[in-house]
Length: 225
Ligand code: ADP
Ligand code: ADP
Image: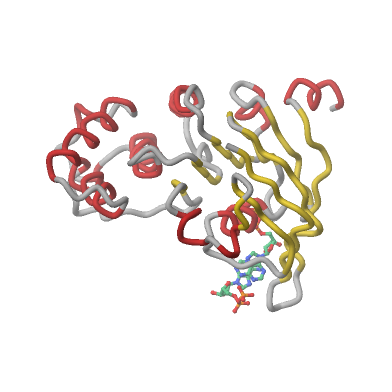
């Protein structure tokens, strides 16, 4: 798997340039996108998952131009937005069952197997009958990652997933992502916390005011800073 981003720009209607000539190559494994608030991380992720159009520039996924293959590429992706909300009145397992049907798993039996596997993987099996709205903050976040990985997407994009989590939940979340990255998938994790990246990612970039200011390994980044 690889994603090649070339000279990507995004200028919003109010003339704010959120991305300024961003070029990046992302390979299989876990990629950390580090940057302060307002750096342009969410903008880049929304463009990758086809929710936003770039002003110009190119994104190729396994050599396929995203702009010409939006549906096909989108079908390869799972996404956990920063402000993820779900249906509080669905039980945890019902919510994942719904996510599985949206992901195109039409057989009930297949969905059941998939949902049970996900519940185990993210440690929510015990609370599968609890209403999603009644889960703890950390559990909600784990439900968020579960819906992002339903149906084994090849690219998983998670936007600031650890914000507001206590240290224990933070580590738990990192471990879920680390387990995922054992497979041939690309995981893109955005964060403003360098510790989220140094412990799990094999590649990273620093984004600041819409510009890439570093790409390389977290080790090399830590040596610089
Ligand atoms: P476009 O995305 O094409 O630039 P708009 O400028 O109309 O479209 O903004 C789209 C949405 O983003 C609107 O709901 C608007 O309220 C919101 N928005 C506008 N400015 C900002 C900002 N600085 N940060 C976050 N959201 C904003
Ligand atoms: P990050 O995810 O790194 O916090 P964002 O991509 O959300 O950064 O935002 C980058 C910049 O673009 C910020 O200055 C933000 O206010 C601005 N911005 C985000 N969305 C919009 C929008 N719809 N319209 C105008 N400006 C926006």
